[in-house]
Amino acid sequence: MRQLETLLDALPEELSRQVFTHASWTDRRSDSYARLAFLGDSVLGLAITSHLYPRLDSERYGAGRLTKIRAQTVSGVACRGVAERLGVPARLVAAAPAGQTADGLKDTERVLASIMEAVIGACYLHNGYETTAAAVVEAFEPEIAAALDHPVDFKSALQERLAQRGQGVTYTVTAEEGPPHERTFEVVASIGDRPMGTGRGRSKKAAEQEAARAALALLDVDADVVEDGLEVA
Image (cartoon, rainbow, N blue to C red; front, side, top):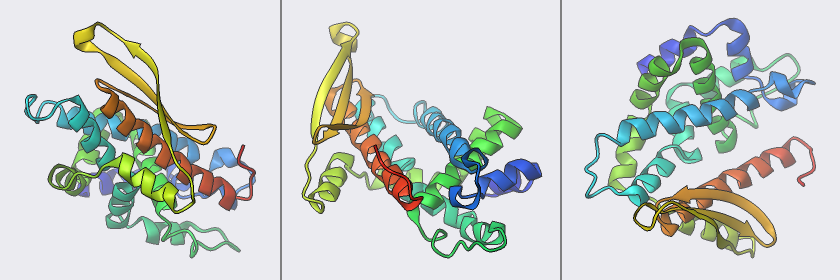
């Protein structure tokens, strides 16, 4: 955690301000942390994947199992945990402009997770990949250990969440690539008629796990959009 905290504290003022600017606090949505979070999500995924791949036995940890471990490590719950250890709630409160408050945001998982990704995105822009990736791996070590010791099934998590709303999910294979011994599958998770997440994997099950994780993330995004007073398409 020290590495990432050091990188965060050393960010230029403009980048640091953007990391902790909620969309409701500015007339220009481009000034909020959303774009940085988009970038940071990709950096986070690559950093964790690059760390896990050479360290886990290939016989015990195939593509499907690796997919689940990575998905759990970079999930919203995991990012919130890292954000709290990094002191993001207090930093968000301190960053609130005059007339605004962070009281309704600092304890919200999707907000903290997005800011965590924005931190990573900003650090990447300022320091490059190698330095940022090392800091990310150090910060997420407890989440990596938890994913290895207590794996979560994202398909089950999505199904349980939708059941509370009286909805269901269907998984459709939309593409198959490569020779039979190196097949890659693309799967779309749909809620009703709406595609909610796309996943790729070396097996249909692995692709479905990725699609379920993406669908869970999009459900959180939809909640953010509603919170900001915008209409969900």
